[in-house]
Length: 214
Ligand code: GAR
Image (cartoon, rainbow, N blue to C red; front, side, top):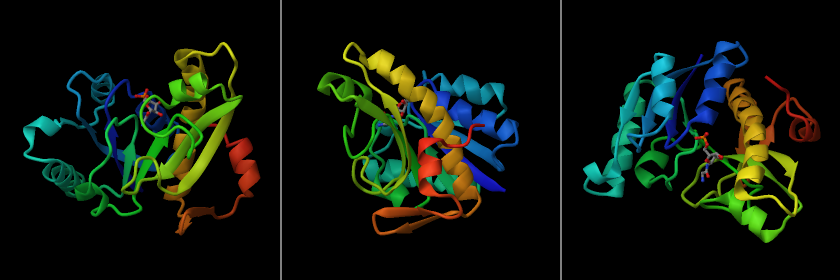
């Protein structure tokens, strides 16, 4: 069974989607720990409700970025984490973590990368006036939202969309594709070839246009 470590900074609705995926048997995984950089994160309540160990680790309590992320890596290793899942973790992850979990960190981003990386992807897309937006699950590398793309889902974007209205449409898809990407990983069906992620077994178009629902 796959052991997950989840990092989240806020509401944690993606964290919840993963918990629900596990509870329903869709995902053969366990969550060993939730780590947050934000003592006020609602994700902490979700962890408590589901008896998941939670750690609050704030960068300001560490001397520098490297020691912060090395410490996080240590906590994850201690708990036998196989895959690190960034679920609304609002920081660019440092080398100390990436080196310890090379190709074993996933992130979800609320835009169709490589468009609109960084913060407020939903607002960037709404303001730009695109007609299609969506979300992306990708492996994490040293860049900002630049790692190999695992799966994407698209949603329409309308001229009167706001960050919130477009964001809500995107978030629904996030909750579908994140558990699915983790499931593919747990089944050993993902491999990385340069920039490309190969999904074994499924035709890519069937996966991307209509990912299996939980
Ligand atoms: C999600 O929309 C996620 O894609 C985004 O933050 C939100 C977290 O929601 N992540 C980023 O913008 C990362 N750059 P949640 O806390 O309810 O899962």
